[in-house]
Length: 169
Image 1 (cartoon, rainbow, N blue to C red):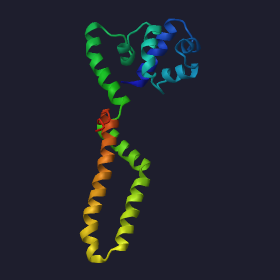
Image 2: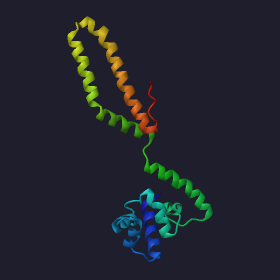
Image 3: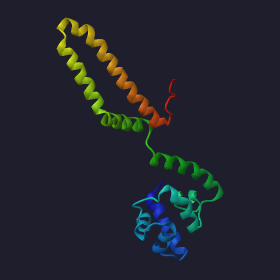
Image 4: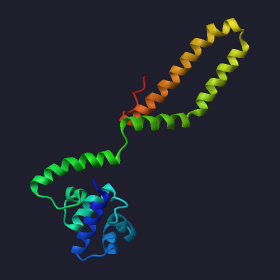
């Protein structure tokens, strides 16, 4: 999707209809500066404005995103390209979303991690060195696994929209 081409197309259609940026903006609930930014290719219209914008300018959303009027054959071909481009540009990949929500969970739960470390340290201070390895190693492994499971359940719920598992009882 060529943002500048789309912007020039919006400007041309608006002028063909004899309306100002201010009038178009008012009809769509945006400012004339926003319309100007679209036309200059600095920004794309928000996705929820594509249908009303297309209606105001007398073109389909597909033609709007292509930045030109399309024949029937071009229309079908361009529809797939526009859909893929819109999804690619408007959403995070699964990997990006996963990393984002991992970092968010860690930030939101730093207190839980700190308390776990402090509790483990407090227990280790009370024990002799020989007892320490026998007792602490499985304890730390269990705490690590528990924290990781909590984090990954949160991440999967956010990335894939999985509902919380049903509670037993």
